[in-house]
Length: 240
Ligand code: 16G
Image (cartoon, rainbow, N blue to C red):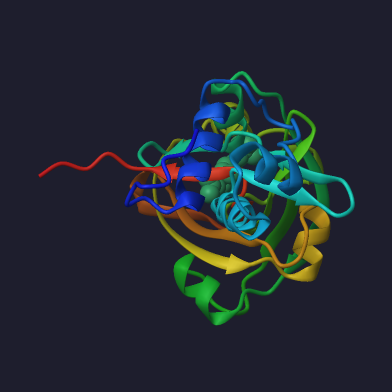
């Protein structure tokens, strides 16, 4: 049972119990956890204490609540290494997941000043704007808006981005993707994003901006991606 003399608060001890039950597989993703009433009877503590533990695990993303149904174990997050310039398709396949795309926008536009500067274009040049929802095993993971200079890839069409865009560049056009710079920031999902990603509001999302280059330092894409923060975490290896 719980150690009521411990310097560790009771709600933290309950959190630890639940965490280790999730880790050991006693509770699997999608399983309901016992209700507040059941837990408070089981541990002989107040429902307030149990609620505190559950709330902390919900905000850590280990549990999620469904209105009127209860509290459930979340799916394990996808851990994405930050080294290596990979595509969404490659990332999902390397995990044994099935990648899919839904093209929700394909337009020719004029760049704003920021994108024009990144892609070394003038504001009168044309850009393709490609908007896709990216799925893993049929679940929406990210929304991606890709900006591509028309003068660099003039033959790009809807077919080229229905599958992997990187495969199109490398295998169809025989161009070499070389390097990229990327930033990641935490935001709250906009209503449209929450709807497309099938998440509740308010929900945290990870907003990633990538500027990628072909060999010879030719910038070929600016990508604005919105990833589900409940499904993704990023890892980098660092040394000193
Ligand atoms: C990834 C890249 C994106 C790239 C796409 C190509 C991030 C944050 N973004 O999603 O920049 O355009 O892969 O994927 O990783 P594809 O070859 O599967 O179309």
